[in-house]
Length: 124
Image (cartoon, rainbow, N blue to C red; front, side, top):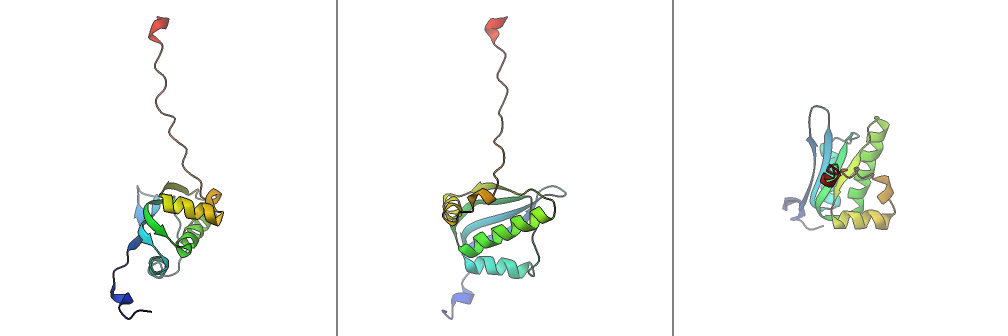
């Protein structure tokens, strides 16, 4: 281990953000390596993290430790009666989930149905 490694800022970040009174989102950004996942786990004092969504759309690199953390959050959320969704995932996250064979563990939100078709003006 490099003596300066502890002094360098981490290239990624994991946070929990609040959306509304009772909605929590696990947000991952940048290079989410083992050091980033370990720091987050330590900050949470190893408590189980319950969320309603995971946003990994701004991830440029994801480690197996970060994938494990995402899995633990989904497990804790399901146990708490929540139905977490992976609402955004970058290409590196999608690829890592596919390679690990766990992409189906992370449900995606239903796509918007979009506006209804306008009535046919010719039918008047």
